[in-house]
Length: 359
Image (cartoon, rainbow, N blue to C red; front, top):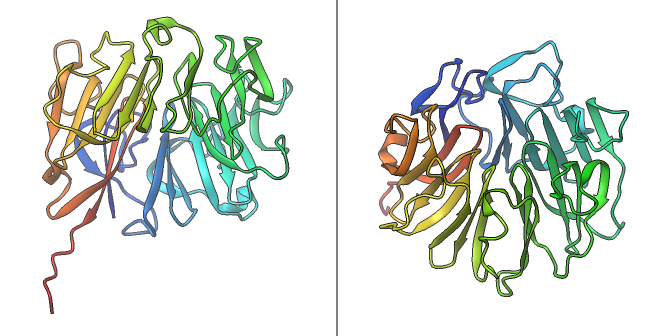
């Protein structure tokens, strides 16, 4: 498995060995390994740091870490190659889920223990008004017989989905993105008045988007209606297969490979109205989005000033149609198996094709 990154890299957050932006896919580097020790499960991106979670439960980080946002020694400022986060930081457990906020990170272990790291001036660490920095372990705030199924974050707030469909959140909720009352939520608080079982969430800067089972199409948007994020939403979202959110936009992919998007579009974040191909997967960054097309190529659109949509953009740094990047830009004889997008960063990971013929 190989990982490629392009876009903003002033703090080494692409993990490509230096701190220069790049508009062309560059191979990400891993300290102490020639290759990743297991398959990549997910990639989460913060303001200037990136977390890579492997299927093995190992966690890697690149970028700015001086403020302890990845639980590492604060004397380490920049990590330009992906480095493993010692499991001793979270009790020797494997990591099940992870998140990267603007200046913080959230880790959920395979024992359903929640750790938060970094800066929490608006409640990002979930430990109360007196804890605004450091490494924290949250106490269990949910029923004993339930488990954490999903979590999502944006710049400064986090939501957690339980196995029974309940939703909890903490952090900056002053726009109502964590429910009522609209305020900074310093410790985990249950979101009330949800009338369906939530199975997944994605977060924008000032909102949280919650969805139920695809067959029912139920969904809810908590928070501000800036960019018409609530007023332009469809009445239901049936047969969704994936949802994503940028700071001001929502994207939902359905079982037919069709993408529906609404919200902020001043940089072309919603993509073109007519799309010549279907999509297999989508990912949304701060103000750009990417997709793996049915034909195996990568499509990018939105704010691309740092090269995160590739080298082609208009004079304002925007891609208001889309760029299509062929699969061979990520190596010959490979399949693209995963995509991720962050704060002006884009990541693509591949697996080598098995060209062995029959014996």
